[in-house]
Image 1 (tube, rainbow, N blue to C red):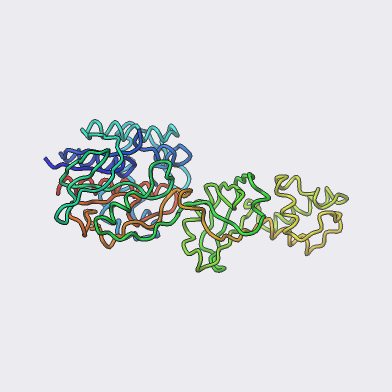
Image 2 (cartoon, rainbow, N blue to C red; image 1 turned 30 degrees about the vertical axis):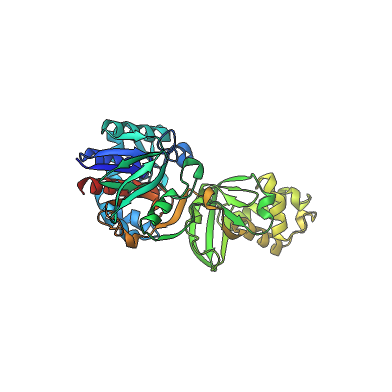
Length: 408
């Protein structure tokens, strides 16, 4: 019976451990936290976007970094397979906008509990201890040291996650272990992260949450992303689900210029919005301009929009020119934010970068540098856009690494 050590009890590690045990291996899972699946439990605002209800080509189209590396993993574990797995494990699922799949209960802990029950039923030995180093002998991985003990094995699966959300245990340990085994680490950087904006516009709006807005991202003046949803202004810039999605498309800070434009009224085209402005202006024709926008915008947003429009806030509404109204219309349909970068990796949902895929077999996820060492999940240099695609990568690579390690 093959002995396997899995380091990391997150999505990929749990899937790898359960799969390997199901193949007949004796599996020890090392997890530094008191409970497994800590990051899983907080994903999707505590709801857990398990996967995306789509085909494999659509998953690959949502993976901007090294998608071809995932062909074999996704071939053996598609979104349909993930959905079937969790429903079989007693978690009914539902599909929402954009193909996003969630537990019907809206409880991420149902996913964590199902995985925990599954690995225990499969016979996985769970050890709550922090892995300190790999045991390396004669060019191969033969176990790991954790909590002052050595755990010898025929194979080791590294599934430690990236460097995002360090409070959940993703502190970049896996990069250190991989380097010790001779691997190259592609610079780890934040993906799905809040954005830092220039100037003080966002700071003035700090705490303001906007629902049902559309944002467009421009890279060197060219549109690269647009979507609709919810966002938040912060003291440093922009955050919220819509902004996190957008950030994954902004991959060249420092060499390219990024601008976010927020359509504050996406349900109204410019002609319809102009009619609405004329109607509001007629209603408030003898008021100061700054007091005429209360029916249209949240109170906190009004002075900032007025300033950006260039119209004198104390000008009477009936004297606002056609050019002034056009400037206001442009501000409402393309409220600007010049983005200078992303927040630190510790605030990101996902880590881009990681162990170079050139040094990992895509068919087995075994190291090309160190015999008996396998990789799964966010530690590998692959990442995806929002919508359940990153967890799909974790499940698929976890299953492939577990199966490959058990087969030897």
